[in-house]
Image (tube, rainbow, N blue to C red; front, side, top):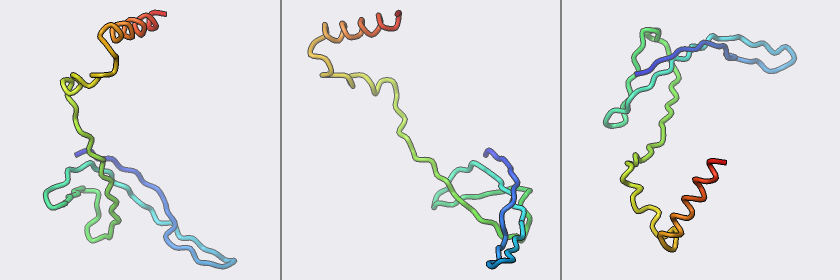
Length: 100
């Protein structure tokens, strides 16, 4: 589990009118990377969390990307060139362009 901490301020309440007043509240952010448990359960444990206080929780879940192995690419270019000579020519032209 990776953790991090930042502190900032946010308006706690703002009253409307010409005598608008703002009370600033200190907000502590604790960032953790956790693993989602079966049933969608997430556990956050930190000694920095004050017992009995209310906390807002925002959950950001990374999109799962399929892992591809090198062997998955074998045959992926099939039909890209009309024949092996055309493929060889294209590869040589690309290689020559790198040397320039």
